[in-house]
Image (cartoon, rainbow, N blue to C red; front, side):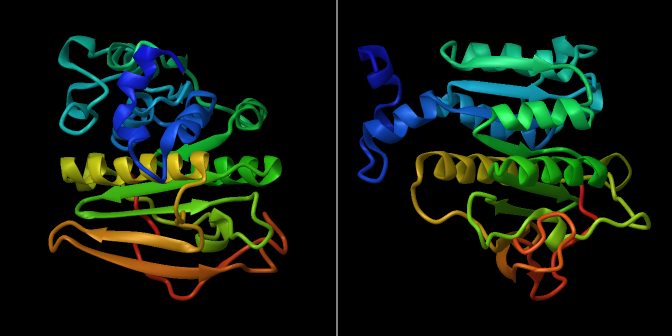
Length: 264
């Protein structure tokens, strides 16, 4: 690290649990962020500002006026831009040291597998179950840690699925894939703007912990927020040996809490 980096990241380095070594791990890390919307915006913001060296933003959507209520990567003058490119522009202004790669496309299985294989960490910030499960399968296949978040109306949730741990659950074990699942979208049901900021920031915090080895990540736990009452609840879940995605590495929820149909 040079003198300017020591100054930029000084408040991290001052933390006893962090220090120079953890900051260097962030600088060397590559993170794939799937979705540059409500959750991906604050998550990518804090990953870039914290010093993650290489961030890949994947999103095939364009910035619309209705996004700006909550998607803080984007600005009014960038309406019509690809979200991934808009996000890249914003993050470059925030931290020119961060290498940001914009993928303006929906990642099919092959491309997703390739990007997950290259990443040290994956953040699921998307808005549909099909993508969530595809990301989960790729993370299981390549044994990459996954931080997943969701938010709708006034409710949010976040969890970590770390496939490097032999007894860790995967996303499918908590939310089994099904064709008849009803998906709720903020375009039709609404979402409180700061809620996605809270959940996305929590995803970034968990991601930083995973990358640096600090603290205890939300593995086997799902953190749930009711923003109307501003109450947090923790749901614990265990592996499901019969999980079709991760086999004996799966997990089964202790109870069907939190909104299984929640979308950002």
